[in-house]
Length: 334
Ligand code: VTB
Figure 1 (cartoon, rainbow, N blue to C red):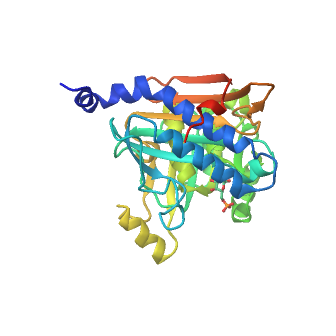
Figure 2 (figure 1 turned 45 degrees about the horizontal axis):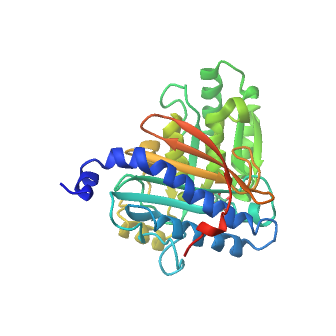
Figure 3 (figure 1 turned 90 degrees about the vertical axis):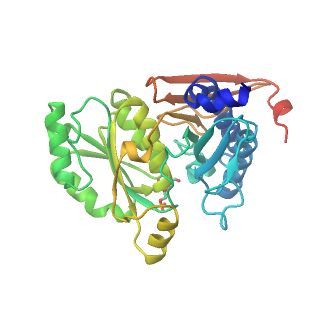
C-alpha cells in the first residue's frame, strides 16, 4: 500500500496529527507579510501581501485542498478565490477557509485586532458560502443548548443568558460591530440594561471572545458581519464548545442565484454552528496587530516574533504558540 493510499484511508489522523503545525506556518507567514505593511495606510497592499504569502505556503502542503471561503469569486479575486485548488495535491481532500488578513483597515491603521486566520476540515465540512453578509449570534461554552436564538428578540436573548448565568441583564456584556445597520439592535440591547462593546472590524475574534469570557468579559456576540468570517468563527468556536447560529443575507435575486450555484437552495436557512463547520476542524490564527486575542508581529533585531492560536475540534485543544523566527527570509521561497 502506498503512502498516498494510507493518507486517503486515514484523512482524520493525517489532518489532526500532521497538519495542525503546518497551518501555524501558513498563518504566521501571512501575518508577518501583512505586518510589514502595518500602519502604512494601504489596506490593499497589506491584504495582497498576506494573500501572496498564504497561497505560497498553502501550495507547499501535502493536501488536495479546495478554497471554500476565500478572497471572493474567481472574477474579483485573482488568488485564493472560492473554488481554487490549493496544496501539492498529494494528500487528503480538504476544505479550506481563509481570511489572510481579517481586519485590513485595522492593519492599515495599526489598530488592535488584525489577524491572519484559516480553517481546514475534511472535504464537504465547511459551508461553501458566497461572500455576502451573515446575521450571527454566538455565546461561549457552558450554557444549555439553545438558550439564545437568532430568531428571538435581543431582549429575550439577553434575559435568557443572564438567567442561565445567574446574573442580572445589566451584568451581561454584548459585542456588536459599530455600524449604522445595527442602530435598532443596539437600542434594543441597551434597553435590557446590558452593556455593549462596539468594534470597528474583526468579528472573527469578536465571536471567539465569547468563549474567553473570563479574559474578555464578553458574553454574547450579536449582529451582521461577513459570511466568510462567520464560517471561520464557527470553526473556532466549535473547538471550544460555544454556541453559534448564522443566516446568510441574500437580499437580491442575484445573491440568491449565486448562492444556488454554490448548493444553497434555501436562502433563509438558519445555520447551526455544526452546519457552518462540521467534521474535524483545525483553525489557526496569528496576530498581525496587537489585540485581545493575540499579540501582533514583533520585528526585532535578527528575529521576528509571532503569536498564534491553534484550535482542534477533535480534542478541543487550544494552543498558543509564540514563535521566534530567525532567517525568515531565507525560507521565503517562491
Ligand atoms: C465584516 C466583518 C469583518 O469587515 O465582514 C466587515 O465580518 C465588513 O462589514 O470582520 P462592513 O461592510 O459593514 O464594513 C470586517 O470587520 C473586517 O473584514
